[in-house]
Amino acid sequence: MSDHRWKNQQYNFDNLGRALLTLFVLALKDGWIPRMYNDIDAVSVEMQPIKNYNEATLIYFISFILIVRFFLLNMFAEEARNKVKHAKKIERQQRLIRELPYYTRFPLWRKCLHDVYISKYFDLIITAIIILNVVTMSLEYYSMPSDLDKVLEYLFKLLKIATGVRALLDTVVHSLPQIGNLGLLFFLFFFIFTTLGVELFGKLECSEEQLCSGLNKHAHFKNFGMTLLTLFRIATGDN
Image 1 (cartoon, helix red, strand yellow):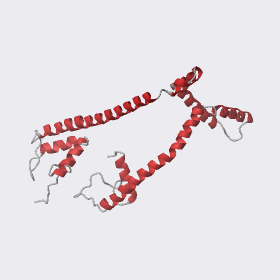
Image 2: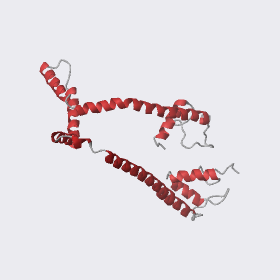
Image 3: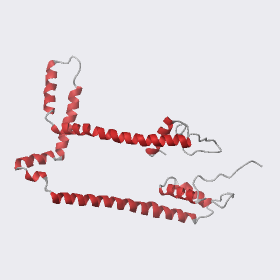
Image 4: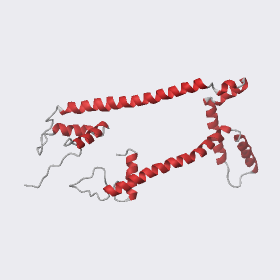
């Protein structure tokens, strides 16, 4: 007789921990169809699976997907969204009660200018000016005529009037420190989990008898660099 051994499914209900992990994966709808059919075909311990042996299992899986995935999780997300929406609404109402809009104290001519400034067409005009600025900058070349140089100089002076562009650039420049701090925070988390990954899974050996689902030469935990890349792939939702 050949030396054959029964191999258990990666996700099963053998114990409470495995069952919770299996249900968590099912709640994410990550390949739940094959797992459902595996349990439908299951007979008993160390017995050959039989196709559609226990069709009643289908009711369990469908009920779990409908109740947990589509009802409970969506209800939780909707409730959280409503709480945030209600809190923002209350805050906005309180702010309106405390003070009137700043432009109500403006004279008529200033209100007209304010209406022009907050108009969506004003943003379109600013965008067109930015595009024109890029085009004029690209017109410069080595040994160009002096007349063209003067024309471009006048255009640049006109573009300096667009204070909205300068305000946008100032906002970007002032937000760079916060972006840098956020990037350092992300790198710190990646560094911590990369170190843990190398320590915990660096000596994990994969073979035909002991398969490692999802791990290959492009995704493993044997060194710091590949572990960091693997965690980045996981963070982006790459399967």
